[in-house]
Image (cartoon, rainbow, N blue to C red):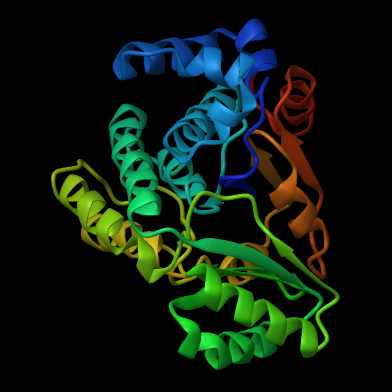
Length: 312
């Protein structure tokens, strides 16, 4: 049994997906169809940049989703299929596609709504985010609580036992960062983001996405999808709708998601899409199996040779 994981915002970069597009029909079909549906060339932006435009929330989420699905289709064509899935924030949508719970074109529409709504919310209610490194999650939570008098602030992502991301209004985030440094954090790193994601500042975006989710066609996952909000497998369509909406304002419990994946006993973990962030986090987990990042043609061939039932 294989685990598939899909990266989140921050993993985008110019050139993402280009190698697979050039080499595999499966990837070309996904990117070309996405361009047609969206009415503009997300593929050109992903492949060529400019970087500033690509990292804008309204574009980055679309590019990451399409790139993840394109990598997924290349793997599936070689008979490399998941037995359990998860995705970090926007990556959760590609994970649901991989598990058969969401049609990818339907997913593209949802991601478009999500990306635009979060981009708009970030402008209407400006925020900030910062990574706290080398301080236990419980201590970071205490620092966040201590800073709450300065404004909206919360834990946004618990990525590992050593890396926690906080989010909210800038003054409150700065206060929490100062408290974390005083508490012994090894590093506190402000993130280059356009808003306070996974915090109450995104409430308007969550409501807008919820309206789109209400009409979305979803199915019971064919394999478990470990959801960000609960770190547990998704149930049926109604629960998925609720959790996808909550995820916009809620915490990404990635460390717990990774623990749940490893508890299922996969023979390997495959990160499908650009970057190696989730691969790096997974490799540092105690007892982690082999981990393979799949973003270039050679990665697909390696996965096919090791785990596939078909040929490319």
